[in-house]
Length: 181
Image (cartoon, rainbow, N blue to C red; front, side, top):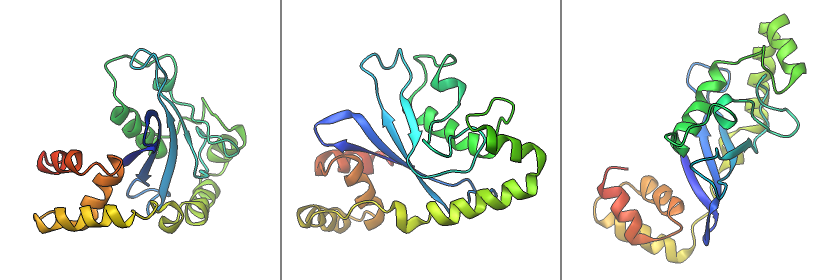
């Protein structure tokens, strides 16, 4: 999973990218989520929705809104953004059709699971293809930072990801890489 600020000056509006869970109809997909951190965080949950279209009973096929208890009344300040994203990933493989966000999808899930699986897999292939969620290219200046960190022995793909997550801050990226993050 990766998380990056949409605006380098703000950590209140983020974009998260997650892989579809293995051995699921979402496998092979790359899903982008919009994450808004309220001023009251961690005392209020982040507001999260899928930007990538998803066929799932607990995700609106129209708006990407997510029905998940920790995004509402089950939130506690002890939870983190990573806990939230991991819970959303887990939700993809553990649908709650009796508490749906999308009634049409939930009805299909309960009435014809094979058709649901086929539709969800099609949507994953159609809307969550890795190329559709690719991160924006780093600037030439950032590529110089990548080269410098690669010369220190770090993996180029990991360096690019960490640089994106840290707004191009080379010093912070190095700290994350050295910490094993």
